[in-house]
Length: 183
Image 1 (cartoon, rainbow, N blue to C red):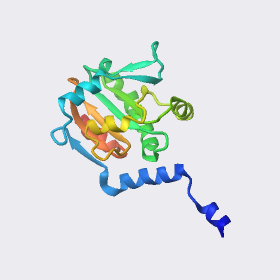
Image 2 (spheres, helix red, strand yellow):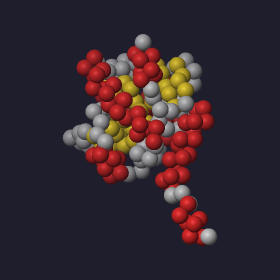
Image 3 (tube, rainbow, N blue to C red):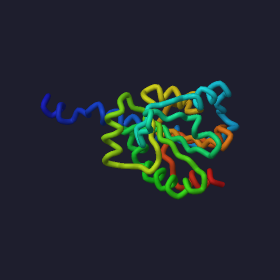
Image 4 (cartoon, rainbow, N blue to C red):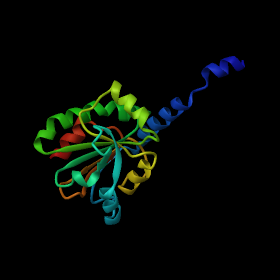
């Protein structure tokens, strides 16, 4: 009997994956306009002051300065390699960036992982067209400060050209979300 239990016992990765899926299915996914759950000015200032380790493309100094993204609309996506909805939405974000980047839109992925190597390995198998930086495990707290009250992934924000949060969503993005955000 213990052999059967051992064969059926889920791995830690399966448990984390199931928990992430449960969070999304539990109704935590939704869009908010910036006038609800607004990130305060201090949190926004701290966000724009961040310099994070670059994953793709690796810049000359190996960092991504978020302040460099101000001045044009920016879609920021918090994600993780172990999060199925995150992985599922990445081709949509890559397509969005490839199509809209020429129209002055920017996209940045922030990996919520404790190490760079798993992100690099993942992106070697599933490349994207937009830059990726490493937010680390502190990325969950960072996203909470920006309005992700549940700390769920994926979490996506749309900043306007002035650096203010225009839209946010916890849960997997759909093409209809991006169409609505583009107005």
